[in-house]
Image (cartoon, rainbow, N blue to C red; front, side, top):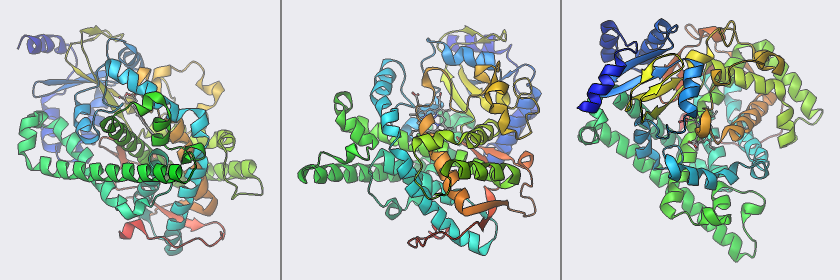
Length: 499
Ligand code: HEM
């Protein structure tokens, strides 16, 4: 009670929602689009102050919107705990890197880091390209009928495929595992996590477990565990077969996360349970972040033909007269305009728009407000990334604002799609390579066109989003495709939308 009183006293000075907002929050709690609208409206209202709070029962949430405040929280060495909302994610993926704090986190980060070293990453463009070609094959039917469709199920499947092939096993058929079911299970779990955040009585594990939501949540978790265990089994068999056949392992040519872990002494010392946790964490973090990011990039490209033409020109400059050549890491590095397009998309539509910390001590911010110990603080990146003080004319899609000469002097914490401070996304380079490889493979074969439907965005500025754990385009990522040129026959693959 004393701690709550202390929090209450300090929080009084932080601007909070008005009664009208609380009523809207109550009505909006089941609807992601209304929660997003409310968040957006409150963020707009509090833009000048750069901070706002809301109480969910006894839990105080504080939303930061200023770059200097974000820097202060994300770099403070005493702020080591992730927000309690990550505990809900922890129920889904176990105590992996995303969830851990303190010394346990430091040890795990050190162990996992070699998987993201340039030496391992440089083997992945070939895997990405192979899976992106499967995606391009699947899209063929959509190009033939020419009608508008949502690209998300296709991209979701391709990303899951890429992640499974690089994290777990190099040679597997992920389609056989009904990935659509996994994707749906993860979506359900994310929606329930968000629902818990806005419904104070479900912040208690006991009450949550008594509710019908828990049954849904548990079903999603069980499906996810079964999926991951299956993949672990596949990997073990793959290694056993390689070893009994006299080969060292597949790790030499196509290392996966598990290979890298089993080949280092610290990694090999991880228990099975720890390996399962890290594997689930990487699968969740990688698919969760990359799927929406990639969908937003494709959506923006479909809405800006001039941008698309420039990317295609760049692809032709880099790949010359051999467009089917598998990209090397060097090729991907040379796709500089495409990289700026990705960065600009992630500025306007960060796929992970908020991440949080538990505040362990009273903390004065550069803005002058004091965060009380016990507060759950969230960095809300759309606010800072759409702030005209950092990005003039923020609603204009302008990839060249990321040219070196135009980025000079910008506050380093004004652009945070991959997080900031010690917990910065470990998969950032992996994600950029994956997105570049996929966009290249799709654009080589198809021109992306706006959906052209009533109510669908005609311009990037018209795109509205929903706030889930990830940010998502409202109404889906709808577009049309037109084939650019005939490409060699490829095996027929089942359409994921029909699964
Ligand atoms: C475009 C795609 C991605 C986005 C936007 C993204 C975004 C983020 C953000 C914002 C954080 C910081 C969370 C926090 O501070 O609490 C983070 C952390 C993390 N990400 Fe990503 N991510 C992406 C792709 C990936 C990929 C591909 C992987 C793995 C293969 C990955 C693995 C992780 C892990 C393990 C962490 C936790 C790091 C730590 O706390 O030490 N992410 N990501």
